Length: 468
Image (cartoon, rainbow, N blue to C red):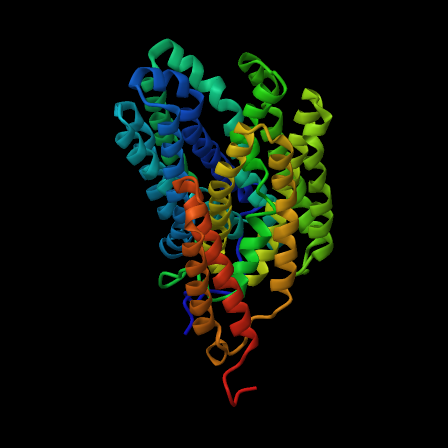
C-alpha cells in the first residue's frame, strides 16, 4: 500500500531566487545548531572551575549528547517526513532552544547531562531537515548544491562560536552565553515561520501518510550507512580532538589555536559546495558512481602521513584537506542515497546517514583519545585516513546486490536476526577486553552491526525453498 499522499507528479518550485530562500534558512538553522552545541566546549575551563566538575565529567556529558543525537537523527527524519517540514522544524528547534538555554541554570553533572541529551535530541533534526528542504524547494539538478547550502551553516557556526560566546561570557558570565543561544533560537523560529511557506516553500510536496521507520533488514539502509558514516568520518575527530595534537604534539599554544583552527571547518564547508557541484555534474543519473568514491578514497589516504611531517602548517593543511574530502563524501552519499529512497523519505534517509555518522564518531573518539594520551599519533591519524577505504569497500559490495522485488520471498529477516544474535554473543564474549564503558559500547555496536549486515546479506541471497 502506498504511504504517500497522492499529488501531481510535477514537482513545483518557487521561481528564481525564491527557491533558494528555504535552503538559506536551513543554513542559518545548522549555524544555530553548531553554535548551541559548541558553547559548552568553548567555555569548558570556566564552567568546570565554577561548578567543580571534572574533565571526565565533561567527557561523559558530551557522550550523552552524541548517544541521543545518534537516535535523534533517524527519529526526526521520520517525523519530518510525516509531520511536514515546516511544523517538524519548529518543534525540533523549539525543543533544542529550550534545552540549550537551560544550561544556564545547571550546576551539576546530572543537570548538564540531561540538558545535553535534550539538546542532542532536538538537534537531530538539523541534517534531515536540510535534505528535506533541498528536495522540496529545488529541482533535481540543483538538490546536491541545495543540501550543501543547507548544511554549510554548521561549519560557519564552528568558526563563529568562540568569536560570539567568549566575549559574552567575559562580560556577563558563562550562564549569559547560554541564555543568548535561547534568544538566537527564538529569532530563527520567527524567521522560519515566515519563509517556510509560499512563495518560498511549495505546498505541493509529497508527505508520508504514516510514520516510516528505517528498515534494518534492507540492504539500501546499510549501503547508505557505509557510504556516509566511515568515508565522511574525518571532520568529527578533527574538529573535536585535533587541538590536543596541535598543543601536545606540535607545541601550539592554546591562545594561538584561534588564529589557525578556523581553517579546517572552513574547508569542510567548501567541501560541501564542491562535492555538491561534482555530484550534480558527474553523478547525475548514476546510482553507483564507484569511480568518484574511489577517487575520494585515494585522496583521503594522504591524511595518514600528517604526524611524520611534524609541521604546524602541514598539519593544518592536511586537516583542512581531510575535512574538504569529508564534505565531498557527504554530498556524494546523499546524491546516491536519493536514488535508493523515494523523495517523500528524504529526511529519513538523511537521518539514517547522520545518525550513523554520529555513532561512528562516538565510537572512534575514545579510541583516538587513548592514542593521543599514549602519543601514538600515527595510529590515530591512520585510523581516520583508512576509515573511508573500509566504508567504500563495504558500500561497493552491498550496492552490487539489488533489492529484491519480492522481499517477503527471501530470508533476510530471519537470517538478519540470527546474525544479530551471533554478533551480540561474540561481543559478550569479548566484553572483558573493554577498558571503559565507552569501549564496551563500541564492542557491542560493532558486533551487532557486523552480525546484522552479514545476516541480511546472506538472507537476501538465499531464497525460500521452491522460489528459486
